[in-house]
Image 1 (cartoon, rainbow, N blue to C red):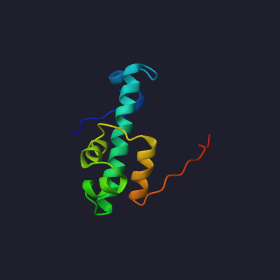
Image 2 (image 1 turned 90 degrees about the horizontal axis):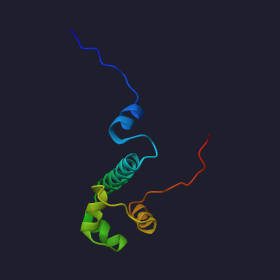
Image 3 (image 1 turned 180 degrees about the horizontal axis):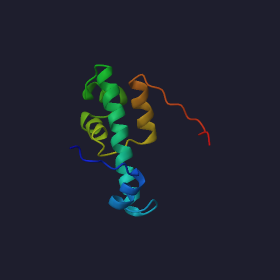
Image 4 (image 1 turned 30 degrees about the vertical axis):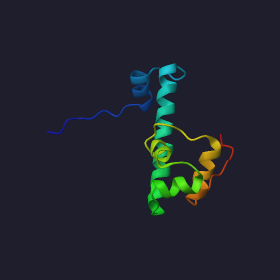
Length: 100
């Protein structure tokens, strides 16, 4: 007999585990999750370009350790460095107004 799984709200889970939206705990989690996602985008794009961390670091004027820390989500690059990385990976960023 299969166990029934309940479908729940992601917001309810985040509220339970990290506090309500706007709390310091929830904001810290959001920042950590965002840094991780940015790192994964950069990691995936770098691998698609068959580029090493050292290759990318050289192209953008930093070192391998810095690129590694970004890809792991330990740190977020500043805006200028982010755009240099995106450019070096042949990616494009579009800044648009959201449709509400």
